Length: 89
Figure 1 (tube, rainbow, N blue to C red):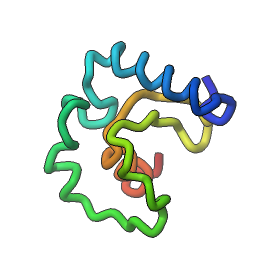
Figure 2 (cartoon, rainbow, N blue to C red):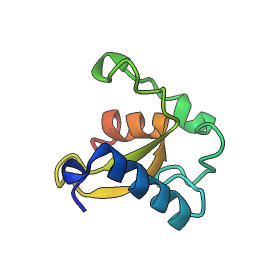
Figure 3 (spheres, one colour):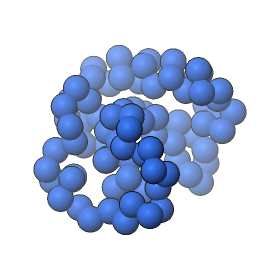
Figure 4 (cartoon, one colour):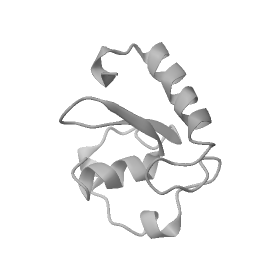
């Protein structure tokens, strides 16, 4: 499923389905999406100038591969930033 082809409403629906399919765990850190991202993730330095001002407004993001545009799963907002900035995803 291509992220760029989804409407905002569809993204929300897909994110909810991933949360359910992942048993409420983050695709990246494997910790509960009901809690903040774990310290081992939030200890990583992020250059927030690369991200929109409202990036942290929503606690759970729909992760997609920036090369293939394929949706991968639901992640904490901070995990999403780490994946992009530190892991190149």
